[in-house]
Length: 345
Ligand code: DGY
Image (cartoon, rainbow, N blue to C red):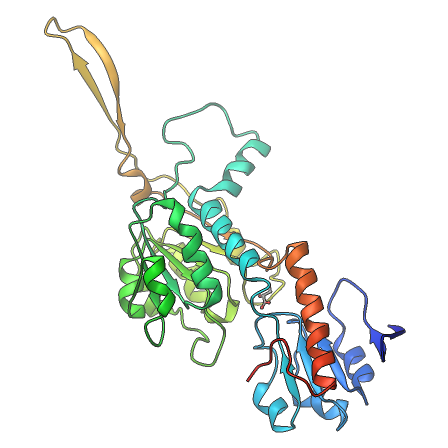
């Protein structure tokens, strides 16, 4: 731990690039007025009890605050700060990147080169699916969901559906239509999860929901792993109930490298491609043109994989520095009994 005097405050800082061990947190929090924490720090009754009566604010360097027992914290009059807005663009960009990486099989294709499996350009090899003409369903249409919809405007998608408790004012401008969750999962080619983790969304994506999806659906999650019943996702991929998944969040984090979900990588195989080569003849019977390769059966019949990223949605230097500044400002404002830049209400 590093102790420093900074501005008007004595600060004790954990400066390692790994989460503070629980026992160190519990030792250090005693008697402190404020806590600057990460989404990896579980802030529960034990932490609050150990901190004692002087704790006035907990500020998390994240937009999600599902790791904080909000009810318990607030019942003690402790304010909670978080970091909305500043990471929206970074997460939305990563979401688009993950959609493309999954749909166009980028990691798998990269591995083909590295593993010496790139023998030649071939008509059906490494074919994926396009966003163009697709139906995209966004589950959770808050700041990040809307920023994803905005970025999809350039891709020529057929339609965007979203779930929400009520119609969102911003939706019209984004060409997005309110849908029930059931309808959204049934008709979407891409299902993108950007909702917050709350009791209502915990385990939301169950076998029952995956069963309703199209066998060609691509499932993307950049919110929280716990929104998904991960075994159900695994089953959906293994049984080919859906085509592929791209996940930036999972359970647990970090996921063990031996986890079966990761083993799905490269298990994709083509079952059958029906390829029509139209051969045009002149009236003398000579071939003049060979063309029109029809690979319409391809995407329906090929099995895809899970593409996994290690929770890097907000990992840009700009977003992370803004998040850290906002977290510090949240603390300073709370200690001065002022309006916080972003307080959990
Ligand atoms: C957050 O801030 O909650 C994000 O998940 C961080 O990447």
